[in-house]
Figure 1: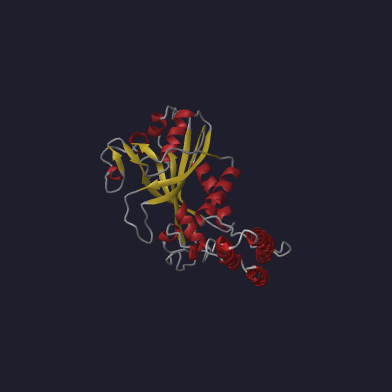
Figure 2 (figure 1 turned 135 degrees about the horizontal axis):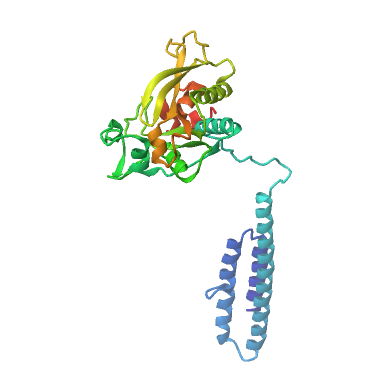
Length: 339
């Protein structure tokens, strides 16, 4: 039995020396020290030994077990250290290498154009005014001299929440709220989203953006309106841009006009953008109606003013030569990356 124990020790030591993984090491532990292992089998056979042999063999068996257990622990520590070093080696980072730059977002083309418009008007002394997109019928229609039977009040043109609440069809309600809360002089622009019950196509959208302007003070005339708009279009489209007023009708202004600019692409000679006319319609404007001033608590005998409204999408489409308004809202990265 001494020889058997010696052979077990020598075999275990050789096997442990050649073990390459922790899994192999666990298999060797079970093979030699497990409940059905080789050393356990020898110790179970000690019952057949004489009283003189039993202590000697028992001591030798314990010694062999101790040596194998010690070798197992040493080998386990060695393999774990090697595995940790291998992991560190495979996961190490070269901090001297350049990193991956995070993707940077860009301004939406509508925001870019809106910022340019804001800069122009702020430079002329205007301030920015904002108001709710879900608006009362009073501010959206009544205060702006739009009567009950006006076509704009029809559900085919306006989104109604209920009989007295609508999604604003223009940012003009912001002007009314400002005139109610602020005494003249007033000089504001009111940019924002507006809503109309239009079918979506290349030139129409149920959601779009407006930038409306309002000036109220003593002795404001149509000449002030024309001068302000001339400064605006020249800064936006260039010093050579010319302005043309055409008579029109808006319930909240009197007199009212549509404003055209000489085509910035052809200079007025006629091209695809201006459809051969040499002029491009850009906005509507007029002198604030006396009834609107009275509705807001301003005396039209003492004060006068002008207002104008610009479609932001229209300006952006002209600037970037875009022929479909839907492109602004489809979030197609291929389109947006061009700007």
